[in-house]
Image (cartoon, rainbow, N blue to C red; front, side, top):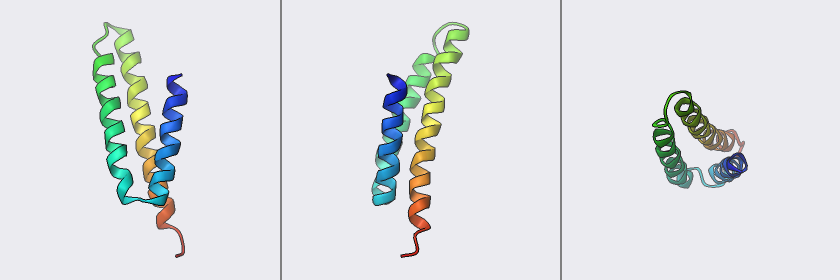
Length: 80
């Protein structure tokens, strides 16, 4: 379920970044801040579980950043 949610957020951010690049920064940062908090909390689990929980949130945060930047980059490449 978490994977579907992250994919939906990434798609929404990519579309938002393509349509209105300046206004997409705030939702992107908010999402990354939320995922960062999840990563910190997940990292407090003992041993290997802490690394696994933390890693899933870190990779999700990277995906959100990449999708936002890809939308802005695609908008910048338009000929008009």
